[in-house]
Length: 230
Image 1 (cartoon, rainbow, N blue to C red):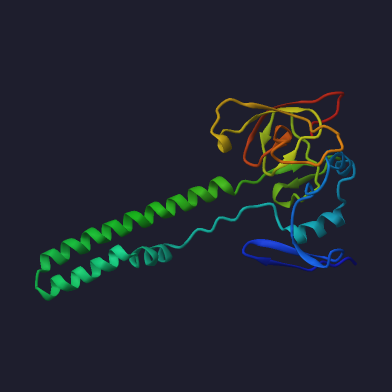
Image 2 (tube, one colour):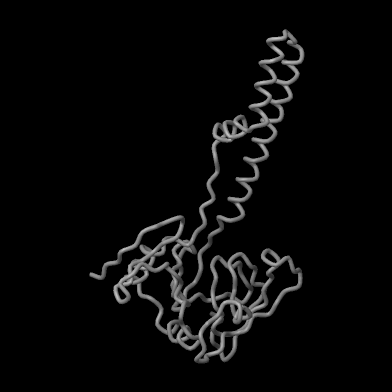
């Protein structure tokens, strides 16, 4: 059984490279690979056993957005320097027996804390609903899996009517019309073409016209020679 040594540090995974005898940062399958090698890798996607091993290393394909509790948000807001100053002000007014001023400050501070906490809670829940998207996707070969179970090396089949990308992927065959407004702000759809099968190292910026980014909307796909778009 093949074993791996890895650990997590500041939200980054480092894996032990036995060949170089050093820790290296865990990266995708595209690092150091040529475009031709990516095509060759797609011709032999990982089997079930290998997929399980890869998932144990890379983890699930998801972004977890934590949502803080109401009590946590209240404490964070109350211990803000502004409200700490308000507490000091209230103590001064009480010492001077200006109770009406104290009541006014307490009411305004309570309203400010409540408004801020409610707005922060809504923003966190809205962000989580936007980011934590998942669906069932089709792999090359007819197998269907949950998008959270995708792993590096999987070959996706894009439907003709389009879909929302739930991971970054290189387009190997066919072409696609993509709406990237969520990433770039451009409202005009862009056309993505298949990655050329050339012996040149893959570069994300240089070959961005062949990359489908997570969160973008694939409007339409077009295949050639009866080969599915993948």
